Amino acid sequence: MSTLIGFWRLSASLRWMAMTFVLCGTMVVEQASAADEKSTGAGTGKPATVTEAVRVLDLTTFPLLKGAKEPVNRSVARLSYTAPSDCKTAFEFQRKTLASQKWTELPGSNATAEYANGTFTRDGFVASMSVSPLGDPKQPGMVNVSLMLHGNVDLKKLPMPADLKPTYVGPQVAMYSTDVSVEKTAEACRKLLLAQGWQPYGKAGDTQFFKQNAIRLTAYITAAPALKGKTSVSFTAEQLSADVPAPADTVDLQYSDSTKQVLFDTKGSEDSVEAFYRKTLGSAGWKATTDNTVKIGFKDMVIFRNAAQDMFSLEMYEMKDEQVLRVTLKHQSAAEVAAIEKRLDEESAAKKSKKETPLTRVKIVLPPGAKLTEEAKTRLEFTVGAGKAKTTAESIRKGLRDAGWKEVVTTADAMVGEIEFTKDNQELTLSYVDTGFLHAEFTIRGPRVELEKATAGKE
Image (tube, rainbow, N blue to C red; front, side, top):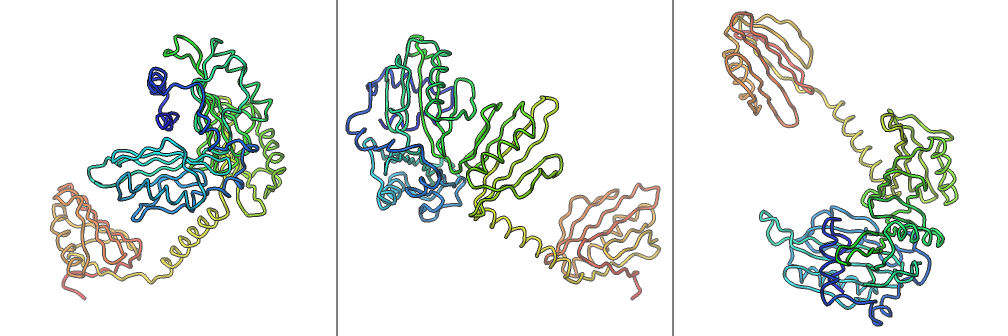
C-alpha cells in the first residue's frame, strides 16, 4: 500500500511508470483489504467544509521539529518545511504528534534513513506524512517534512460506471480499468459525479477536477499502455484550506492551496461573473463592501468580508487578444489580513519617522576654481577643468573617509566615476564624467543628507 502513497504527486510523465510497476508487481489487488476499509472510516458524511476539517487537523498550528526553518507552505490542509534531523527521528516526531491528536496510523508505514512516509485517519478523514533528505550538500543533515490532509471522502463509495473494475482502492487513491473508451468513460464519470453534487472545477488534459464544499476531487482518465489499451481511471481527493468557488463555465481554471486562490478565464461577461460571486458568496454569509466594482489600475475589484472578518478579493480584467475575461478570487483569513495591515502600518510609520528625522549635514570641500552649476540641500553639481576629475574625486573621497564614511567603488578611473558611501543609515553618491577636452562634470547626492559646500583652503 505504501507504494501508492505518493502516486498522485508524480508528474504526468511519470505516472504510467509508476502504474506499470504496480500492475506488473505484487501490489496489484482488486480492492483494499478489509482491515484497511475498517480502519479508515472515511466517507461518514458529506465532503467536509474547512470548519469541519479544522476540528480534526489544522496544519497552521501543527508543531514543528526543533530548529525548523520557516515553512515554505503552511495552510490548513498542507504543511511543508525543512529541519535538522534524520528521516526516522522526524517521522517519529510527527507520528507522536498525530497520535496525541487522536489520529490512528494505518498499516503500510515506512521509515528508513533515506525516506519515511505514513497514512493516518481520524473521524473519517485521511492525512499523509512524508520525510525525505533535503539533498543539499550546503545544508547537510536537513530533511524535508510534508503533511497533507486529504479530506473525508471515501473513494470506494464514489459513483462509478458499472463497467469499471477495481485495480487498487485505498485511502488515498482509487484505480480502475475498463474496456470502454477514454471519452465515454470520462463523460460517464462526469455525469455521475455531477448528479452526486460535485461541481466542475477545471481540467487539464486527461485530468478533470471537481469540488464539493472544501474538497477537491481529481479524476485522471486515460489510455493505459500497461493494460493493453484499456482505459484507466484514478481518483484522488484533497482537503482545501479555503472554500473558493468558481463558475462551471471556466477556461484553464487553476487553484493554488498555498495562496488559497483560484484563477480562470471565461467567455462570460464581467457583470455575470460579479453576479455569480455576489450570489454564491452572499448565500455563504459574505457581504460585498461596495455596491459596484472598484477600478484599481487596469483591474475591476470587489472585496467581500464575513462576520469573522475574513476576506475574499475578486479581480477581473479583459484579455483582449484572447477574447476572455481573466478572473482571480483570493481568500485571506482575518489573521492574514491583520498581519498585512500591521506590516503596512509599520512601513508607513517607518517612512514617516524617516521623513521627520533631521538631515545629516555633510561638508563637501570643492577644489579652487570649481564652478557650481546646481545647489540643493541633498544635491550638488559642479564642474572642474578638463582632466582634473580623478584628482578632485580622490580629494573628496579622502574627506568623506576621514569623516567616517565607508565607500563602495563601482567605477573610478580618469574618465568616469561612480562611488557610493554609507554611514550609519545614510547614503551618499559621488559621480563624475571627464572627457579630457571639456569641463569635467560632478554630481554629489544623498536622499537623507544636507550637503554643505566649502572651498579648499577656506572655512
